[in-house]
Image 1 (cartoon, rainbow, N blue to C red):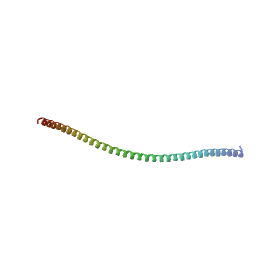
Image 2 (cartoon, one colour):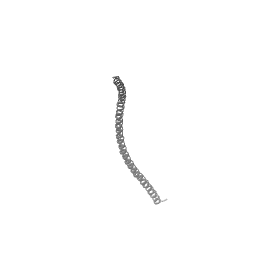
Image 3 (tube, one colour):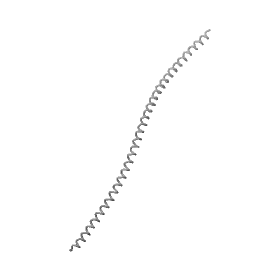
Length: 123
């Protein structure tokens, strides 16, 4: 082989290598761009998820406060109901006592009327 042929072969091989390196660089650049786009997309998704998480945490805190307030109201109502029940029981007991007194007074009135009628009849 002559020097010119060798130079032509080396030039062709060099061109082939440069072409292959260019192709590899193009593929890697495209991959890098895709990776950067994926990374940016993931970053945006992460930000959206963080905002949603903050919103949900705020809702959770609000709901917990509402539950605590509802529980306090329930406790107040239960205490009020208990007091009303005790008062009703007291009134019912007083009604029974008064009914017994009315029965006793009616009995005494009956006795007095009987005595009065006997006294009139005896004159």
